[in-house]
Length: 323
Ligand code: PBG
View 1: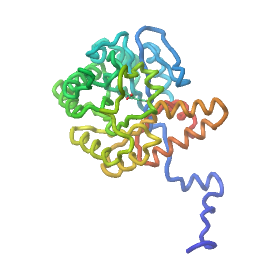
View 2: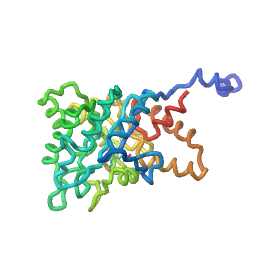
View 3: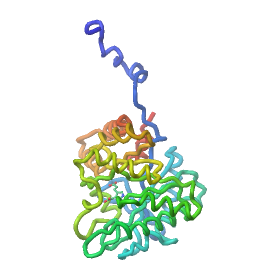
View 4: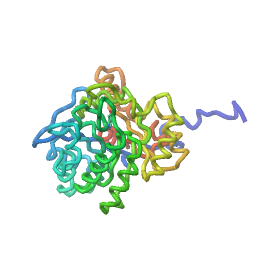
């Protein structure tokens, strides 16, 4: 059958008709909200390139998490900005490090939300790279030990899930075996499996104070033109024990989200990164875009592409907009 028997517009006539045939529905259940934690008490500093996003001390984070829980968001992911950085990222796996303290503050406030942690070394390294550096090279194998130690220390402070974002080879296996050896067999790993070397991380690096002091991250993060390689990365992480697979960034990589979701059928996460957030915020502030509509359209697109989980700085706003 063709026109005039078929008229596609019949089912678009009004909002109730559209609701009935809507294929993708986004829910607050899909969100993870990223938070940046700093030392001290009573600290809440807005990140200039990410309006509405703050660096917060553990006590402020715990309060903030009450609000996030009340909105129905299932979890947060923590990033830490330590007091001091060094060449061994010692703040990353310090029992009383910034992230460890924030986890305890959230848990002590009897919040039942999931507390995830980003497992990486870049925020804790004086050079800002995600692994140990010798003679200008980011070394893989010796970084694994520090990453595994970091993951274990997050879990011992109370984290419910760890999310390695460093892109060293073999880190999921290293983290899995360290967690298992220390008795944390039931803690899942969400791996940043297909993490691209992206310019969209710009504002995050201001937020996390993790700009590399030399070079860039292209020797470990993925080359943006590659898609088949993302499938290999995801397959390896699954082999190594990842429970959830992430693609990052989201919007410019929705083809990858779709491929990974279809190929593996694993819970798939998309990270709607800082640059994606800041672009919308900046354009909305100028009155060039309708923020609510653009955000909801973008988040829905991520879900339509196959994402089950969306990490997004828009989570709180979107929770309020979802009907
Ligand atoms: C740490 C890390 C980064 C992001 C998440 N974890 C930055 C990077 O790799 O440079 C980016 C998040 C964002 O841009 O919102 N390695």
